[in-house]
Each structure stands twice: as C-alpha cells, then as structure tokens.
Length: 353
Image (tube, rainbow, N blue to C red; front, side, top):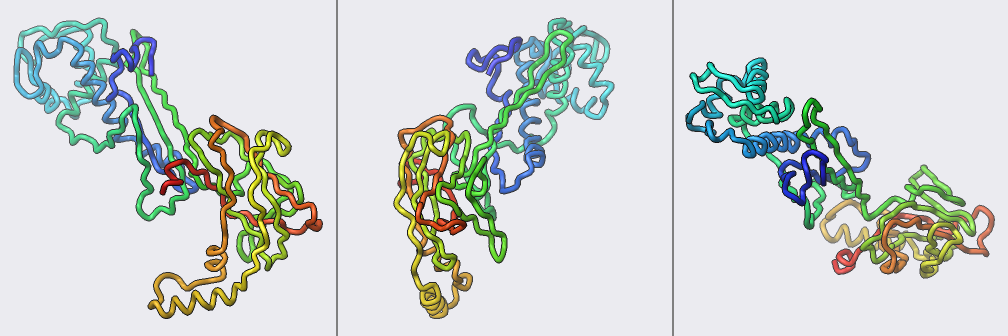
C-alpha cells in the first residue's frame, strides 16, 4: 500500500494499525451494505490509531502527557473538558496549527503550520476518545494465513469478503481521502445454475427444483474462476432412471465448448436402484435406532448412491473460463442426459480431509 504524501507500508510511514482489514463470512443472498456496517468498529479504531500516530510523530509530548499534568494539561483533562463541546474541539484543532495561550495557563502552545486541518482533527478525535471504551476489533494482520470459519447456524453455502480500507492524512488544504477494496471469494461449492452462459439446459421448479442437461453437446460456462491452488473439480451429477435419463459423458474444456480439452470424466450411467426397497431399509433402521434425525425420504436414498465425477486441474492456475460439455449422441431429442447437483472445487487440504 502506498500514498503519494503519506508514504508506504514497506517504509513504515503508513503503519499497519492505520489500515482497516476485515474478513467477513457472506451468507447466501448477502447484503453487502449490511456487512459494511459491521466494519464501523474497525474503522473507528483505525481513526483512533491514526490520531495517536500523528501525535506520536509530533512534539506534543514535550508539553503534554496522557494522564498526568505537565507543562500543559493532560490529554485526559482536555478530553473531560471538551468531550461534548464540538466548537471547543474545533478551537483546539486550530490551536494545534496556529498555536495559542490562555486557557490552561500562560504557557504558549507552539504552532504547527505543517499540520493540515484534517490531521489536527484526527489528533483531537484521538484525545477526545481516550476516555471511551475501545471498540472490540478482530485483529487481522496485513500478511499471513487466515483460517475461515463458518458462523454458527449458517449453512456454509455463503462466501467470504476480504476488505482493506485506508484514509490518508490529507495535505495542505486538501481534505483526507478514503478508499477501500473488497475482494469476494466464492464458496468452493457452487450451484450449477450459477453459470455465465449455457446451451441445452432445462430448469424445473415443481414438484422440486431440478437442473437438467437435455441435449447432446450441451454445455455450461463458468467464467473467470481462479484455479490457483485448486487440485480437482468434482461434479455431482446423476442420470435418474425415474426420469428416463440417458446418461452421458462430461468433458472439461477451456475458453469455449470446443476449446482445449482438460479431461473427460467417467460416464454417468442411469441409476437403476430400487428406491422404494432401499428406502424401506433406511426407514426400518431409523425406527430401530430410535428415530434419530429426520425421516428418510427418496432424496435420502438417491444421495447415498450419488457420486462425484472428477477432473484433475492441478496443472491449471490463474483465472480461467471453464466449459462443461455433455455428450451422448444416442440420446433422443429432448431426453434428459444428466441431472446436475453441484460443482465443488477442491485443493490439497480438502483432499486430505
């Protein structure tokens, strides 16, 4: 991070505590405005730290101490006197720049013409906040590793937002400027319906939501996915016999449906199990076990027999446009090939676990 007037982080002229860092879990359908409101305590703390930094870098401590009267009043005395006096705080900020005498005795306060009005205001805000309870702030370093945690009662289908914000110190007559950068990190498991473009698909919403592939040569495109560190792409798909699905193969291509071929997964074949018979077994075990958990359903049975179709993408990195292409030249027109359930991106840690 660098600022033309303030300098850089690497030089130490911008201190780490002056940069607000947030890493938030974003639930499904999150409101970024609501999440941004949760950053207030972090930004308040950064403002407090910035004022402290400005005071530490000046000659203020030659005349003032935080809690003990010196040549001038202690900062806690100043905070107690002017905490609720906005006009008085403006006068203090002006005196920091122009100097002054008379309020706390006859000793003159030195002028600091190199300090801007915005910087003086930050210094005053720091002083006024010395008596306040300090905001609870999660300390996130500017570099290193961060372990994500799904909050309690969340379904884990959300993503994460990494935010960095900085407000410069201003210069001369220029006011302070704030900027922030938010990077959205997608969940490693995505809904196949969240494609960027597609051909040969069918979405049913009743009696339950189903996402079907219904054409030989159909494809789904997902653009600008960062595959750095991703080892496998696992496709959860099935060919349910109850729907007369034909099955087929899935190919992974880059950039277009006929772009470079990365791999071909094992053929998806129609699921031929007797769902009612398997369901009867599960419900018998459920009854015998004291009815632990929800009552097994047909969906429970199908989930047990579903499998993932794996693509090795360990040699890929950076941002890629991936295309899933579905093929079965023997399928009839309009016949379902496969039903898509989910797409999961796995790294080495996922595979070990």
